[in-house]
Length: 413
Length: 159
Image (cartoon, rainbow over all chains, first blue to last red; front, side):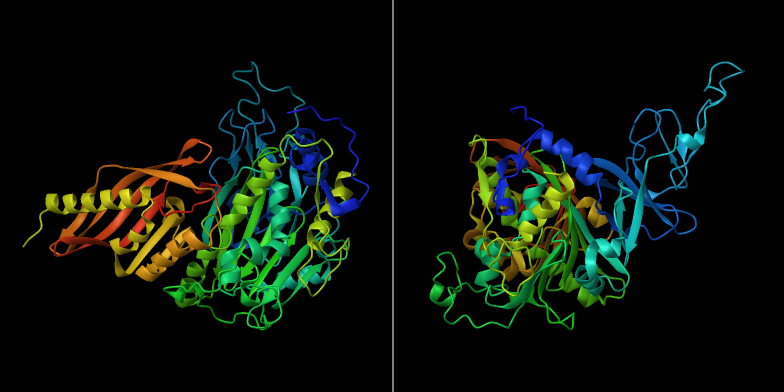
């Protein structure tokens, strides 16, 4: 891997071009850790239903940084770096659980559920010999903490004092759509991850890309689940950082479009399912939206595919690899038949999903395709012009341009 | 005819050998016929299953849904061609009657991709409910419990 220079200039065409280098350069990966993930961004940490009781905790990552999300004795939610203040060891190894305190196995330094250092083994030495200096102050050696914002049971964390309040960060449209699904207590019905051999930003572009949905995902188009002809919108907040794309099934007329008469070469509308149970659904939201993907910059996606609800969170694992964590959800008050339908529809998504198996394949194809190119080679992101605005059509790459707008702002490039 | 435990084990082992060969040979269309018409096939991380989660990677509740998995694998799924090799371990019969049994069998799957890279793709155990119909044995339920919660890129063919 060539060593990159620290100076990096974005192409003059702005966010209609994306230099391939941003998916590949270790120096850029390092800068993302400090400027983006430790910068003025709210990062997804977890859900209320994952840490319902006092002492409950869950591990997560903000960028590459390991963090603990936990609930204290008073019900307050906290987040801190999962790293002992002594020698840097991981403090907590089990992904999820319940603790009265966090104790490091290495030298027994212990912290309360707020991250304060409460005890140091052999602090006063043994029989008056050894131990920490007399002026060692526990209060100065707590865990590094994140500010936490809780939004309708969704917990976000930030390292930066400059990050605006969460409602302001999300803006009114994004806030309203999050409140729509996260309107009452949820429960986890599935959790797993996908290890992807590509840069994390390729994944965030993919979820913000309504262009590919009915083309790459043949299942979508072939079985009429999502087509460009259906009613829907691609929405961005005022900053362009966050997005929503939704469609309403059963609202389209394909006559006169490229879908008519199988003009799209790969559309297979002759296919019939042997057991269409997988498509069984019930109208859950009064707005009639049947398919929605919403991102909160930088690294989390909230989805509603029919009744299949979930969170997808991307964790970078180096410049060329990342891990995509899927948390599938239902409501605490679901009837058993509703849980059954949600579980069945989960066949559509995830690493074996009828409509998302391909995503892991294509993002990897891009990572491999850009190797060894000209140093200034770049992607073209010009569908829908150069606008970074909401619109009713989804034949646009505006949500991707919005991502790069946010990225350039926080990265200063 | 009463089925003793050894006979039950042999019948499950035979079924599993055919099952593994069918997938590894790419004869996917024959795969659904190894299940009863009403059935349950679930690939899920062991950890998720133990937590009581119901959503995993594959969930089929009928032979038709199994066939739809194969239909989509052939017609709509886009991925690089890959080869599985199942290594199926010793079967333990947990319960048995004249008409069927429950059994557990460890498995490992090596995946070879078209660039030639070979890697251990999945390991775990099958928890099978098998029914005996005359000479035939069929899966009524097959839980594929994976030891890892993490999947390398994607799962195309069944495990």
